[in-house]
Image 1 (spheres, one colour):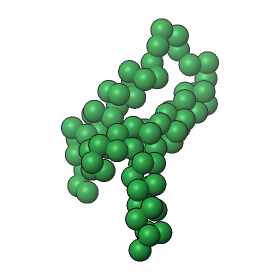
Image 2 (image 1 turned 180 degrees about the horizontal axis):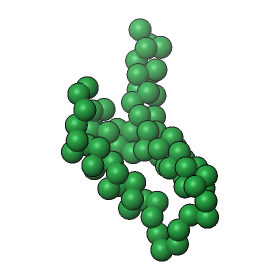
Image 3 (image 1 turned 180 degrees about the vertical axis):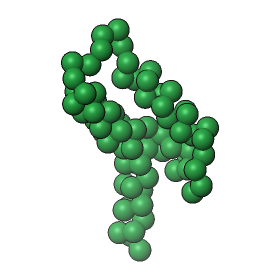
Length: 71
């Protein structure tokens, strides 16, 4: 998939909304951990993806595995 600047801007806007509150992070490592947890535990696994028919990756994987095990 080619790089889409609008998609990247949308991601970072969402990231800011999710992670930035009234107090700053205690350290750079704390900020890195918060970003990692957001991306790995929510953004890439739980949120709905239009490319997957507005399912989460976990839902799409379960469907895929169910179809695969039947065939």
